[in-house]
Image (cartoon, rainbow, N blue to C red; front, side, top):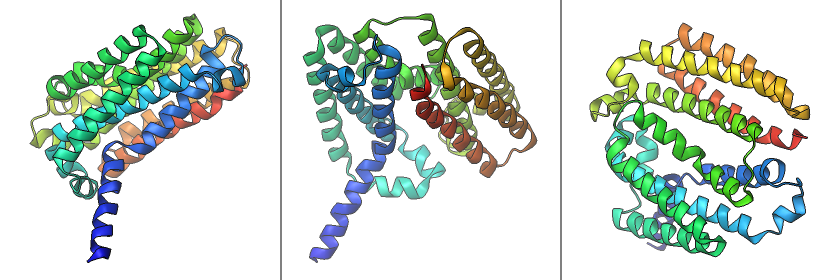
Length: 292
């Protein structure tokens, strides 16, 4: 009896960690910290960033708000996820709706408390961010183009919180941010190809559902071209030291990605392409310390 109870509690914890996508939150927190040192802070001083409480408060606010966003997304996408990823969704269903809502409210509350500790400007930034996630999940996620655009903007928006704190707006940061925007957009579109069956069944008006796979691939090829052009611009016009090898790799990677995208159209291939874009993002994160 006690063993069964412990197993049930363990499954609920695993389900909750799955709902909030804990692994994504950890990677994002590390990314914010690294970007703070090598891009946003003026002196690239590790110790001044590490011992700046406000940086950690922003990271906590980001982590809690995005975790809450994943919860509300899970709530509205449950039927679709049950079709696209049944095993993961069954584990997540071990967590009751009541528990999810309590955690959702608690995480948003924690987010705003820590944001207020930074400044009133940070408070309103994260309040706007929380409301944007809510509006996206309830109203916009089912619509093509605008749903993809807002999803990607919400993904990269936490980095603007750190930029606002350091008041460091440079042309180079803009190009790096635009590159990230394009890569995340590409990842989002591959996910639409993977989720076609569930999106179609639940009447989600994604680009793939509305316009078909061929148009989606044309759109992705356009984004791939923009990624290559942006990589070349960063490589040629900014002093990025050894990080230039990442952007060279990115050009090769995206070229191969686009070729494979058009040659194969099965679900397994789409999942491999999705993982390859995720790998590109992680490698980009790891390459940041190479920046001069």
